[in-house]
Amino acid sequence: MKKLKKRLSILTVFISILAIGCSSDSNIESSIDSKPDGSKRPTTAPKISGFSVPVKIVGDAPFALTAPTSNSSGAFTYTSSNTAVATIVGNVVTIVGAGTSVIKATQAASGSFSTGEISADFVVLSSAPTPPFGLRYLYVSTTGNDANDGSINLPFLTINKAAQVAIAGDVVIIKSGTYSPTSSIVVANSGTSSAPITFFAEIKDAVIIDGNNSTTPNATDRQGLFTILGTTTTYKSWIVIDGLRVIKSKWAGIYSRYSDNVIVKNCSTNDTGASGIIAANSSNIKILNNKVQLACMYPDTSQNTNECITIASVATFEVAYNSVSDRITNPSNGGEGIDAKNNSTNGTIHHNTVTSLNRVGIYIDAFLGNLSNIEVYNNKIFSVISGISVASEEGGVVDGVKIHDNLIYDIDRCGIRIAGYLQDGPLRNLDVYQNTVVNCGLNAGTWENVGLLIEAKNVTNTGFNFRNNIISGCPYQVRANNQTFPYVLDNNILFGATVVSGTNRIAADPIFKNPASKDFSLSVGSPAINMAVGTPLSTKDFTDFTRDSNPDIGAFEYR
Image (cartoon, rainbow, N blue to C red; front, side, top):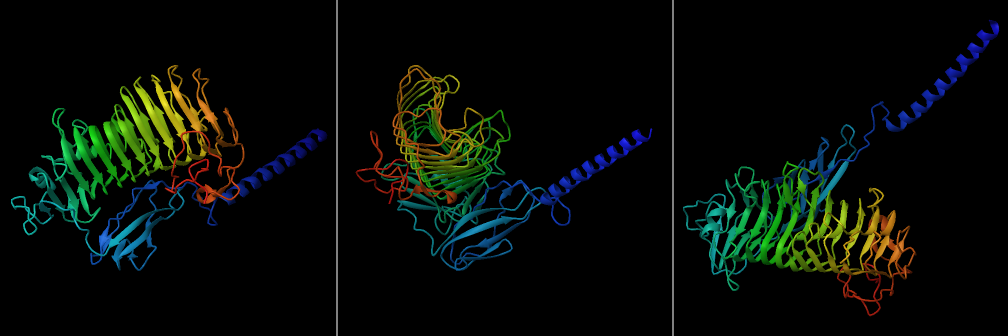
């Protein structure tokens, strides 16, 4: 009995020591995760989006900033990087002088969320821009009346009134302010090549078209808050939309269908149910220097809302110098950044910035159509689900796509994907060259954890050429899919593990200048310098710097 008691005492002491040890470890862990007062430290970064500041003119009154969208309830504070342009007290901005300032919104920690920040450029002009030449000028003002004649002293009240009466050669000058139409603004007439109809915001981004109270567009008519709509036999043509801001549309922001020679430039859209900007069944379309945020936000996952910028069956188009961002949730079926699809032909997608999306950055898809002669170059894509994808989802034909001089980095899944989705239709004459692809596939499964995924397997595929790219820092640099058709994978810098290497692989570190700061230009001694060979080769790099006679691998020419 004594021996048993002794053993029990020893066992009790041993358990106590274990308990103390476990308690000690728990306290150490708790001290790391807790503040001195014992409350938990914030551990999750907030998702902040949708922050912008309208362009103003010297002499404009102080104005209040609209807070960004965030999944944290922390309070925002604001700072101005250039107090010679603007100062901020609370959330009120006072204009000091002409120039540009970066307005930073900083969100305080709240609950489990840590601090976060987002910035936007604020431009102050010394005077109002000069409107383009017109045969007649029509004016719209929030203090006008639709019974007026639209002259400078007797402006219209609504943009829709001006859209109904404007004819070839008219310039509609829209005064700053918020316009809240009760139905879609629909352009009634066409311009001509020498006398287009122009809708011109007197101050870019200061003309706000708010669709919150509008019954149209909607998921039934599937049009836009600003709509250009012809017919299958008579296109609406020669129309320019310049500097408008469209927000809270229940479907698309700016919509152009059965149209020809339409330009959408210097506009912005925010919080639209479907595309921010869409052109369909049209020709000669230009979408230039626009900002699209929070597009395709219709709250129904069964609805196909298209893409943030959509080009669908458009012959001859240019999508350039736009920024697309801030679709970080997935409320509907859609939301890719920029999409050229269906029967689209003879188009360029270049110098765009696409970020903060939970879909593909740039998507090229024939679907059921015949898509051809598309060039995708000098785009910057980061912090999206996938970078650039090419596909034929439903059996249409893709013929002639060039993807070059793009910078793609920090992508959850594939950097560039030659996709084998659904029906895996035929892809022909595809050139992927002189791109820089870094840190892709870091949040993917075992198939998409790759910089370049050559997935398409249609046996009629032909003319695949992957050459002179830098692919670095991905779990795997290149993966193929046991294709039976031949393809060229040659002279690429593949730094890191790779499933397939192709010919003349360069396995060395590309030696970027400052990758920690996202500067992926080439540093002295880079193995990419003067090493690009074969065809095709680009003549200008990602920064539009002219390449020399011995060009470099990747998107940047060394200088």
